[in-house]
Image 1 (cartoon, one colour):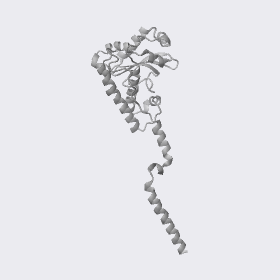
Image 2 (cartoon, rainbow, N blue to C red; image 1 turned 135 degrees about the vertical axis):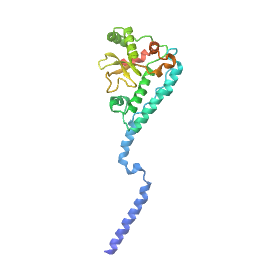
Image 3 (cartoon, helix red, strand yellow; image 1 turned 180 degrees about the vertical axis):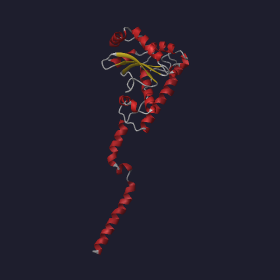
Image 4 (cartoon, rainbow, N blue to C red; image 1 turned 90 degrees about the vertical axis):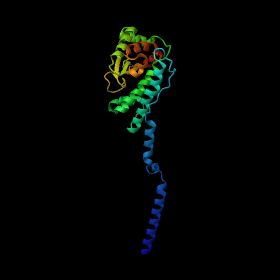
Length: 245
């Protein structure tokens, strides 16, 4: 009996020593292998914002938007929004699959995530809403919808410009489409946009104008009205029409 007990003791000790030697060789994901797929999926699905490449040079919108403003606006302001929102996504363990999900829960986001996420998306939208030498007015279905909603294109321009001028401080003016494709003009403060779940007027953005001072101050100083008037000359109506259809 004593011999059997001694043999069992030696066998158990041998097993433990082998286990102790092997355990340090295992990587953390080997020990917790059942958690690996979830971690990888979260990283794969996590949203990351990025700047769209410009389709025109910094001087491509002159004389209405000057090259220096475009360069600073794109490489400094917009780049900072993208950097900051991506930092917030990582630090706060946000796991949105796309920008739509992100803005659909804007009211629950931190100020850093919300403001910088809005700034990143809004500016991409803004760059793609402009081009040099484009059409002076929309055509086709978009023109028909504008005429129906606002009376005429000129009346639409007046109302949109009023929204841009009436935004106190920093913000945006928007043309949006609701679920029934009815067109509306609205305005948001700071870097909010009509996709966010808690803005007063929600809808699909078709056209947006940045009225933060950094968008125009180098050229126009405090003359926002001149900036707004000049901006109509660089609206990319082809892009706006594609968003509407």
